[in-house]
Image (cartoon, rainbow, N blue to C red; front, side, top):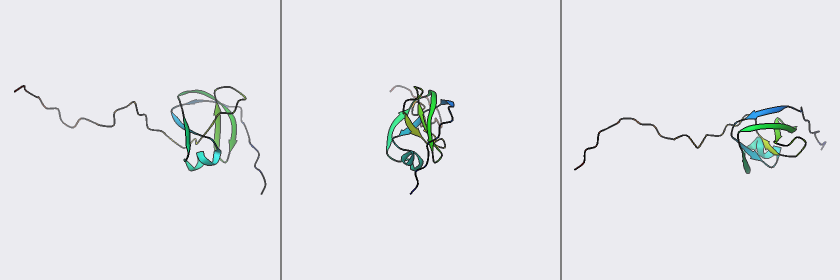
Length: 90
């Protein structure tokens, strides 16, 4: 089996919250989450099979992300108000 070359496009990304993985294969399969990539500016370290390894320090290995993945923002409420009612003391 031939090894695929890793490619960096030397790009910079402004990312929102994403899941971070140890390998490109895990990122592609969206399994074995290693960390959460917090919002910020990241550099492209490597690319493999459509997945991107992003890092905050240029030239230093970071976390693999799936660019097609979105992560729900847990700081927003997961409920909505259907009807407001007045409550009176007894």
